[in-house]
Length: 283
Image 1 (cartoon, rainbow, N blue to C red):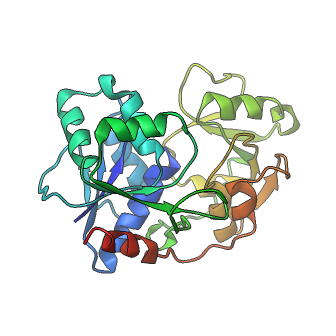
Image 2: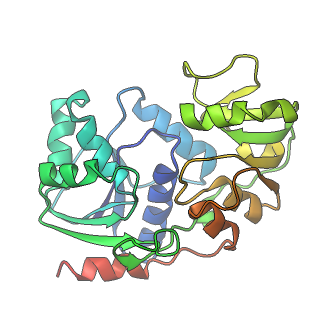
């Protein structure tokens, strides 16, 4: 049983990718499950609502539990799942801390990222995994390490949607940095919706759409991609490509990250061979 660990907030690309790959692996005969260590500001139901609004099922998900644990390998879809849990370790309950120590002390498959280059080694030293096998999107991270691996959306488990347009332009503002970038250009897009959390950084004068959202892809005509920070594997404009929605690339085109890499990629079926190869290295 492969344990895919999530320590992020519920509306996070890594949570989506984790669930999608879990579903695909199980459909291909590789037993897997998602283990969510809930963020202190969110409940189990918040995570379930996210899955319910996007996917046709909600299978093989555990919360703050090691039920059925047999010492199997752990997969994280981004190094930040390890780093942030280490950084915020004191905010977890004793049970959550025990689960994290157990999951990250064995064999770990870690998808390479550079969000926290100084803290990730500290997190590894803290958890002391038996062995780490890295996966890496070498187009996004030319100097990264690991077996080449491209995170790809598993559209086979998406719910169907029918357009019910509520505003013309959608923005993604799920943290303070994303939101601040949107504020610089939002006056150019009066008919807008900003996907965000109900947090202190929002501007109440804007049309804020609080997550999770039912049938998000049905609500808008055009997605405006504004992130000016490193973006390893953007999801919404992949979804727009798949569902024939327009995208405005409103960021520096000279930035080299997942933004320009995924801009040139077409939606495709996720490839699990790198995960299988990584699992083979533990035998």
